[in-house]
Length: 159
Image (cartoon, rainbow, N blue to C red; front, side, top):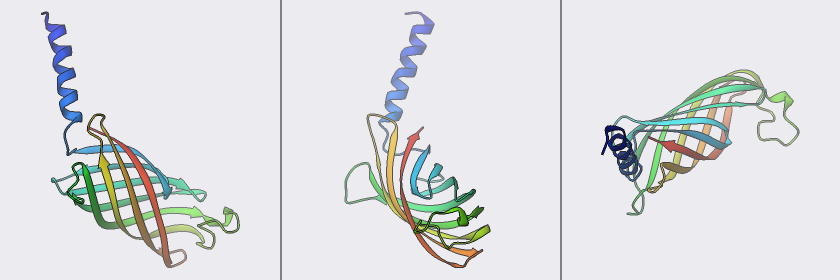
């Protein structure tokens, strides 16, 4: 077999074995819900991860950074639950929200606050994808102090 054929077969075998791994190191994808945006998750250790969410809504944008602890859920392979906390910062204009919209009354301008998160995710074994569902309460310090409840569904590609 020539060197190029051997290299192609080796890469294929390596990619299949990586996609079947239970744990992943890094995943990037999209999140729908509150907030909606792009997100990434990176594991420092087998059970400690950082997640970042970049979202554009309410006439502005917000960046959320979370630290999460993760472990197996219900003794089901590839199903894991996680919890943690972090902070968010950004700017927005909730005045553009239609009446009854989730962010109505939250004000406008610079926002900063703290976040909590609890969720569950499933790591697919045949394809390198992760599906996660979470609840994410938030406390805004500015512009209008208060507690807001959100949640979402994340779909990420892992490598």
